[in-house]
Image: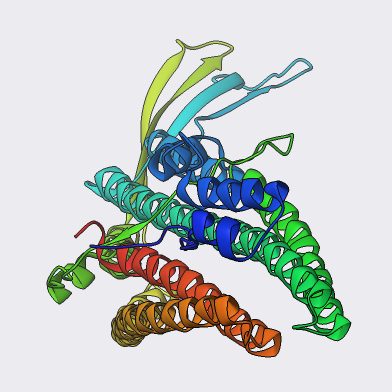
Length: 422
């Protein structure tokens, strides 16, 4: 398996001590560099644990969940009947007419057509199901954003470590150059060039420290932490030797596509509800009448409301048909877009693997060139300009290798967003 670790500096300390007459402090420094390059960062929290925490605390997800809660509450709302109507009247003064009505009281309850309330419930349920899909979409987006931020942190941290190891290596070369200057085998310019190179790498390391702090803030905010907490980064990332075959059929079950199926159900239920609401509505009630010189009376009542001249329902039916066609077109466009983005992520991931393999070859060759230059030191023919050139190339290859690994996992997180776990 390809595995990114620190680049080992193969330096024979005994050879340097006996032939190069390096101070004891330089020998200790070489040993220190070797230990640094070989050591890891220790335990770090698993990315999946971070994702689970973010899914629980991120306000974007919480907002979508509240919207779903509102939609489910509306299911109970649609069960309600229209307000019951109460009315009454009383005649003041003395009346001389027999059978004169003194007062009346009535109550009336309007009722929707048979099946209308059930249609409203189905429509509200369909709306709630559509909002439920939005929760899945929001969770996938948060997991993707957090993964991308984590791998950016990983990339920055590894670049810092590589720069630090190269600075330490340049200090060793500086000691070697000083020794060569003492015996007349090198000029002071070589020492100055090595020092300037160290200054350049130190500057780059400080800039990366700022980048790391900024990205760490982004990571903590995705997790909705009030304080910026240090994020331990995994020591190494392992790239599988072979890629798992991608099942493109899984893309059809992506929530951004299933959302359109739920919205189609909403339109279907809206159309069924519109048909029910276009039917007549009726009401039942009772009226109680009080008379002066006659027995009081109770009169049952009924009313019927027929939408004869109302074109609203026909218009709504046409709108639902157009909305259904619109959703199908939008789904097709979204499906094409998701497929294209998935293919782009897969190609980028494959390209990252190729770059990684190339940098491994380059690093091996740079290591061989570095060993040749160190052997030349024994004969007093070492060219520190060549040492700097090889060191710069080696650093360039190390940086590109880190970028390739980080890019591989960034693109893998995008692939996971589209098709889920392989």
